[in-house]
Structures are given as C-alpha cells and as structure tokens.
Image (cartoon, rainbow, N blue to C red; front, side, top):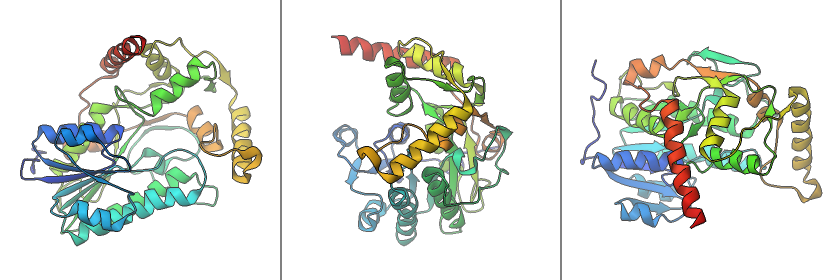
Length: 350
C-alpha cells in the first residue's frame, strides 16, 4: 500500500503554529528537508529559524488577523501551538487551546487551505484507572466543572478539528504521548531539576507501564499523516495515538532519562492516596490564591492519578492508515539523549 500519495514538495507552503517549540522545530526541520516553504507562528522571534528559511509570524494564536496573514497561500497547516500545565486560570487554556484552534480553522477555510493536521494528546480520553493497549475507540470523557483544564480544552479543540473534515478541508488529529529526546524543553528539564534538588518522587511504586514518543518519531508521524491526507483518505476526519510502541515501567523511563542527563536514579515513593490528597490541597490553595501562590501547581489530583496508572496504546491504526513506524527505538533514543546531554554538560562547564 502507498501512503505518501500526496508528498510534500517545494510547491507547498506550510504553516506550523507553535513552530518554535520542541515538536514544532523537529517538524519544521523535516519540512525544510523536503524543500517546502515554511512559515511559523509563535509568541517570540526566532532568528535561527528565519536564518534557516522560515517566515515567522509573531503573535498570539488567538489573533485572527495574524492567522489570516499566516495562512494566505498555504497548502497545509500543522497546528501545534498549545498551552499545557496546571496553572490558573481556565480562561487562558480556553483562549489558546480551544479558541485558538477555532481561529486556525476559520483562517484555513477562508484562505482555502487543503489540509489541517492537529496535534492533540492522549489525555483527551484519559479516565480514572489504567489504560492498557487501548485503541482509538476509547471514548471522550464527559466534561465536568472539575475537569483538568489542559485535557478538557484539547478535547474541545480535537472535536472541532475533526468535525470540520470535508471535501474542501481534510483534517486529522495525532495524539503523541510524552514526547522526549534531544532539545526537550519540558519533560526532561522538569524531572532533572527535581531530581538534582532531591524532590523527585514516584507516585506509587513506579511499575505502571507507560508509552512515550521519541521526538523524531513524533515529527515523522506528522509528516506521514500529512502526506497521506486528502478528502476521503483513510485518515481524514480521524484521530490517532502516536507512541514508540514500547511501553515500559515509568520508573525505568524516568531513571533512563535521568541517567542520560548525568543524574542518579530516583528511588523515593509517595503512596497514591497521599499524593491524591496533596493534589487536592494544592488545587484548593492555588484557586483561592492563598499565600500569594500562582503559576504552575506542584501537584493536582489529575496529575497524581496519571503518574500512578498505566498508559499505553495500540498504534496499529496509524501504521495501517498512513504507514507510521517508529524510526528510533527507546534504547537508541536514550543513547542519543545521553550524547546530547554529555555535550550540553561539557559546554556548561567550559
């Protein structure tokens, strides 16, 4: 079966929202290798990306005028910009993740963009308890007033993107889980900082299996999905889990990453029930604004639950519909991460 029925070429003008982020940069690099004309949106300026040949549109993802300019003449859009985390208020998650996505859809339709590839998250279907080998038939959760902000707004956005799939605008959604690798500016820095400060703990015993996704695999999946996408294609209007397909105990994943960064292993644990109530207390205090606390919450009930449960997925649909196959294995990924961290640590010492 041929998956790249619509290869990306120099004839394509492609917008990557959030193109300055971890996944965005990796995807931009692959697009430039294909000689596509690449544009990005972001809150900052990115001189290195401009030097590489990208056109940068600086501003907020909810800025409709900015998006209309950025999408003019584009053949496809990779919508990766998002707000993650647990900080207050909800309105910021809604503005960026949901309303920003609606603005992207509107710009695509007004400017005749043919393809929209949305970067979602497996958390849009997370419920209490373990998820082991689940496929895309897993239903969305019902939103409540206590729904965590990030998965709730990503869920709203994914639904909106898939609902717009049509003969004029083909859409698809990818759900990469826990992206990591060289250049990671989120996952590794967080656990490394906590480990070096002696504050890293597993919730439960850390034996719960989780899927993760090496950065090149995640970026490649987006390119493959785009090249297979068209009105009526197998992946049009559908969502897909993307992982390395090698679930491992959480403690092994974390300690392998820390070893690559030159840190010792984490051996301390917090009982799940204790972590849950600590999370509830954090949520209450931060929502009330007591003690001047604001920003990212150190723990929430949702985070406690996700850290203590299994999350690994069946990726056969992505393999079937657009030929996804992980390029870099977990073992090779940890090796590459170590090489990157060794070079970083050496540079910091000099």
